[in-house]
Each structure stands twice: as structure tokens, then as C-alpha cells.
Amino acid sequence: MLDTAVTHRPASLVDPFGRAITYVRVSVTDRCDFRCVYCMAEDMTFLPKKDVLSLEELDRLCSAFIDKGVRKLRLTGGEPLVRRNIMSLIRSLSRHLDSGALEELTLTTNGSQLARFATELADAGVRRINVSVDTLDPVKFKEITRWGELDKVKAGIEAARAAGLKIKINAVALKDVNEFEIDDLIRWAHGDGMDLTLIETMPLGEIGTDRTDQYLPLSLVRSRLESKWTLEDIAYKTGGPARYVRVAETGGRLGLITPLTHNFCEGCNRVRVTCTGTLFMCLGQEDAADLRAPLRASEADDFLNAAIDEAISRKPKGHDFIIDRQHRKPAVGRHMSVTGG
Ligand code: SAM
Ligand code: SF4
Image 1 (cartoon, rainbow, N blue to C red):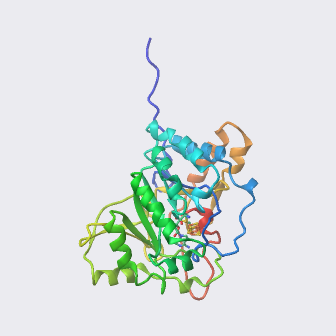
Image 2 (cartoon, rainbow, N blue to C red):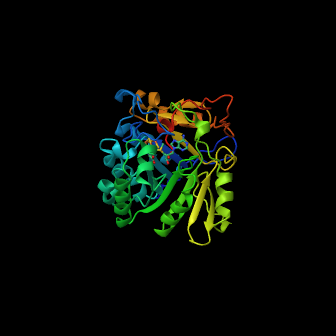
Image 3 (cartoon, rainbow, N blue to C red):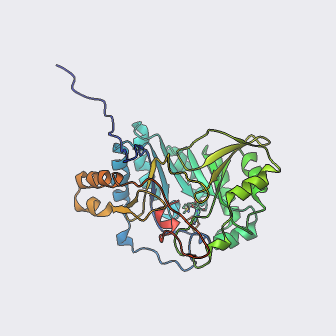
């Protein structure tokens, strides 16, 4: 008899501009054990639990995207590692790594819980993680994160490295705060074999302060760095918006994410889903699709699949971020901790 089994090739998600969507970032919680000044107000009101997707719903949602050809999944938040039982979701999702459907399962974390979870993450097939560290000065670290402790995060990074995880450090460039510490961050990260990515502040959500005070253009940072270091443009891409250079003196990679001074939209291969199941087709646009209703409407995934397809057909060409002194309001009202960084 003829073997009718066909190798499963996922139908790819292609947007109206011909970009295949292969990368999804999913926020698994809006909660966090830090209150970084550029991200949250100190007295944040978090979402009621019933609005947040359950771990089972998150699993179905991620799996639906993977069935549609998504190859890279990043869990974020809020702080993903403070979500109760998060490891059960990560272990469950790792079946897609075993099957080969998923190339990479990763997360962005503030590192506070890493010492606890590093080994389990490695055992579940996580290979690389991003850890956010904006300063190496413990006092400033407390000022920026309000509730964080640098020592704990450093211990978490050590544990993750010992478990064999590759680490990329993310640092938000902040005027007057870590502005003159970037050299130290490069020495530290590259000295330990970690890539470093600098991020410009993005106008996402009200944070109770004026963002024009925080904004430090990376074009300025880069020109200052170039007076001390040899920066070589390289073609390295991670599927993200970062442009990479190699620092000749350290041999390490430095990424620059400049959503405000450059346009990174042409090659965009990603979408984001909030912890309430809202799919944002673009980080800088309000247009969104609700995936929670179709998830909850049926145990089968037909509604969910249709909603994803319909949303991708509306993915916009690009964003229109703006931080300016006249408007002073965020271009996009939601916080990064809701959309996921
Ligand atoms: N809690 C985790 C963390 O801090 O890594 C994951 C979520 S956090 C929202 C993801 C990344 O977004 C972090 O690197 C953080 O520094 C960055 N971020 C948060 N708010 C931002 C903003 N308004 N502009 C630029 N980056 C921001
Ligand atoms: Fe929490 Fe990350 Fe936002 Fe800081 S940047 S408050 S660690 S979600």
C-alpha cells in the first residue's frame, strides 16, 4: 500500500508585505518583582488574574503559532520567571524543540530568579537567554529598578553560565544615569563572553515621569564609543531589530536597538502577544487582535487559527514612534511590561 503519510510542513504566516512571521514574543505575565523607572510606575495596578491567559492557554497559543511556522519563541513579561509554575509551561513547550518544529525557545529576564531556575531552563532545552542589566553600580541599580539587587542578578547570571546558557545582556541607555558607564558594561559583558545590546528608551506607557529626560540617542553613544573603541559593522542578525558591531579590542558583539532614530521595520519577522492574549502585529502601533476570545470559545483551535491568520493579514508596514517635547505623551499607551520587550 502506498504510504500516504506526508512530512508535516507548517504553512507559513506571511504578511501583506511578504514578510514571513517566524518569531513570536509572548508575555506570560504583566507582573514583576522590579519597578524599573523607564518601564513601570512604582504603584502599578496589575491585571486581574481572570484576564491573564492560563498556562494551558499560553501553551495552546504558542503551539498554534509554531504549527504555523514560527521557529523562535521568546517568553517575556513583566518578569517571566515570577509567573507561578512557569517551568511547567517551558517544559511543555520544549516538546516543540524535541520535534524540531521550534528552533529556539528563549526568554528575556531581569535575572532576579535565575539562580533558582538556571539548571531547569537548561534541562528544558533553553540555550540562550537575555538578561537586562543597565548598570554595574549597585546603588544606581537600585535607583533604576527601584526594587532590584544587583548582587542577586549577578549571581543569577553566574548560575546561568554554569548551567551552560549563553547570555546576552540588554541595557537601556539612559541619559545622566548609565550614559558614562557604557564602556564598563562593554568590558564586563565581553570579558565574560556575553554579547551586549543597548536599547533606546521607547515611549511605551505612562510611567509618571517625563521621558524626554531619559532619552539618550544611541547615535550619540556610538560616536562617543568610536573615540575609544574600534567598532566594525557586521552582518550578524538575530531576527531582532538590533544592528550589530564587533568591538575589535574585545572581540565581542555590541547590538544597538534604535527604534527612534532608525527604522528597523523592513525586515520585521515578528509579532507580540500580551499575557491577556492580545496580538500586536507591530510594537509601535495600536492595531491589535484579540486571541483570548477565540482561545476560550472552543477547545479546538479552529477559531484561534482563523484569528491569527486574519490578524497577520493586517500587519502594518512599520511604526511611528515619537518622543517630543510638545506631546510628552507616550506614542503608544501600553507599557512594555504588558506587550513584552
Ligand atoms: N522583566 C524582563 C526584563 O527586564 O528583562 C523582561 C521584560 S522587559 C519589559 C524587556 C526589556 O524591555 C528589558 O530589557 C527592559 O529593559 C526593556 N524595556 C522596558 N521598558 C522599556 C522602554 N520604555 N524602552 C526601552 N526598553 C524598555
Ligand atoms: Fe520588570 Fe523588566 Fe519592566 Fe524592569 S524592565 S520593571 S524588570 S518588566
